[in-house]
Length: 97
Image 1 (spheres, rainbow, N blue to C red):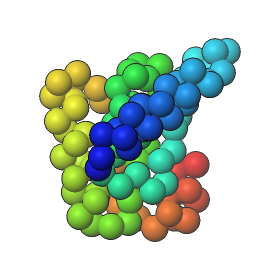
Image 2 (image 1 turned 90 degrees about the vertical axis):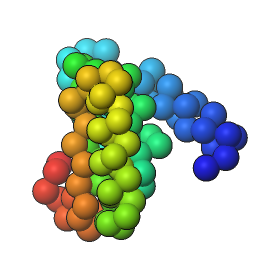
Image 3 (image 1 turned 120 degrees about the vertical axis):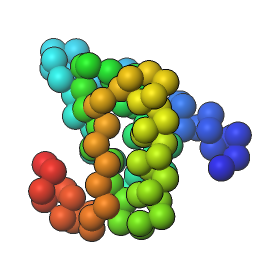
Image 4 (image 1 turned 180 degrees about the vertical axis):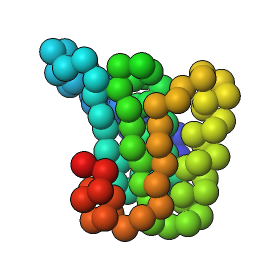
């Protein structure tokens, strides 16, 4: 991942966080094709107790690194609002939503 992609990821994370409906007490973000978590992990960090992130990737290697990244982030910030899945995107949407 390039540093340019990293700044683009941060810009999109900020856009998602700031576009939340303030009248909704709890936000849920579904990342169907999460990869290793470049969006899911920082979004869960920013939401903290006011939301939950469900992140999915069908690729077992990407899922493994998504879980590792989530665990590393939990260790630093004690975030417990990120759940990781390794299923087909259609099944994820059908079952998670």
